[in-house]
Image (cartoon, rainbow, N blue to C red; front, side, top):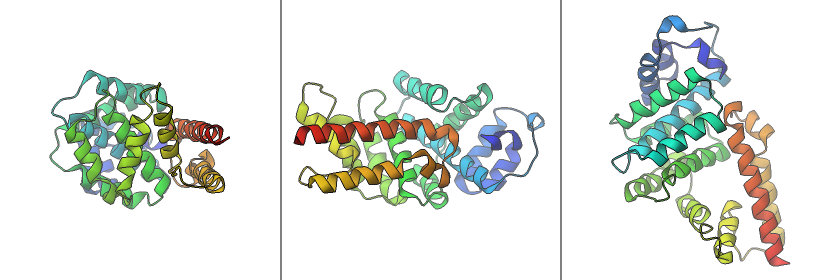
Length: 253
């Protein structure tokens, strides 16, 4: 997060613009004083994209956590885990992320407005899928998909330029394998990871697997603008992709 030491509450809102700029500036103003900026160097285009990804992720997490009317301890634990273990943020970066979450949960702007701005900055489908998966993971943090959370997750795919079927695909991934006694449920989840259908041939499954591997390869994602803080999430996705392919191959042998 090289951009973090270059921004102030006034400049980040101006640079990002739109609803994300407004919430980013407000959150930063509540986190620390402008005088604490470490480096006033020029913000690069890559750093601007990093800012958009970071701010939109935590804005969306705040919206999702409050969707059912209250933020549960499980949702708080997920956000803290995401910050500490997956993004490995510094204490000040963590404070800023939490400030964005708090601003978002009290903000009246609909989530779709933030998502539309995110999509403009990230036209690549794999990054938009990753973004959607983070939101789905947050919604399922307490083990229940609340109707209000479901409504949001069903609403936003068009604004992410994703097919409506992405919701059902995520449901299959998160729900089907929850009962470890259900082999059929596990396989359904594995097919969903590869976005495949059991009716597809072995060759088609292999092609889908290779495509997924290319999409979520760290070098590919880095070239498309994913910051290093989010790479751990991408690494975990690669693990899921490999596990899914091996499980499907075994079931067909």
